[in-house]
Image 1 (tube, rainbow, N blue to C red):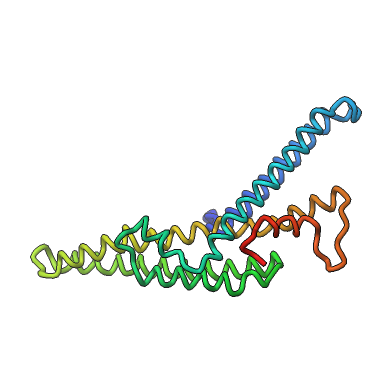
Image 2 (cartoon, rainbow, N blue to C red; image 1 turned 90 degrees about the vertical axis):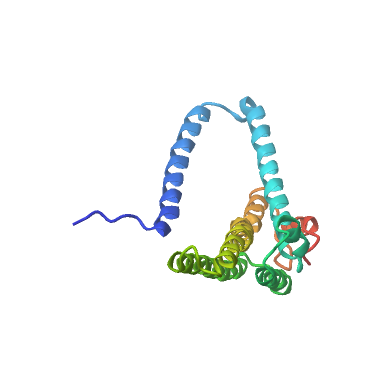
Length: 223
C-alpha cells in the first residue's frame, strides 16, 4: 500500500505536536538547571521572566487592538485607493461589507469561541471570493489562447486579466491576510485571563477578569 501523503490540513496538527514535544524536553532541561537553586539565587532570572511576560502580553494586546481597529472601520476605501489607484470597485464593496459586518456583530460576542466562529465564516467567504477571481483569470486566459493573436478583443481581455491579477486578487489576498492574522489573536483574552489567575486576581461579580477591562481600555473602538 502506498504511503499516504499528509493533507494540508494535517500539517498544523503535526506542527503543534512537534512543538509540544520540544517544549516538554526544554522544560525538563530548565528544571535540571534550576532544581538545586533556591529563589534568592535566581532573582535576576525571575525578574527577566516577569518582564518578558509583561512584554508579550503588551505586544499581544497592541496587535489585537491594531487589527481590531482596522476591522471595525466600516469604510477602508481610502486605504485601498492609495495602494490600488485602479481598484476593483466590486471587490472594494465586498471588503467594506465585511467591515460593516464586523462593526455590527463582532463587538457583541465577548467570547473567543464565538469570535473565532465569526472570523472563520468571513475567511470562508473571502476564500470563495479568491477562487472566483482565480477562476475568472483562468477562463479569460483560456479564451486568449484559443482565439489566437489576431482576435479583435485580445487587448481588452489582456487588460482584464492584468487587472484581475494585479488588483482584484491582491485586494482579496490582502484582506484575507488580515483575517488570518486576527483569527488566533482572539485568544488574547484567554492569555491575559490565565496570567491574571496565576497572579491571584479574582473574577469580578459580573464574571469579567480585571485584565479584560484593561484590554478594553486599550481597544477604544470596542464597547
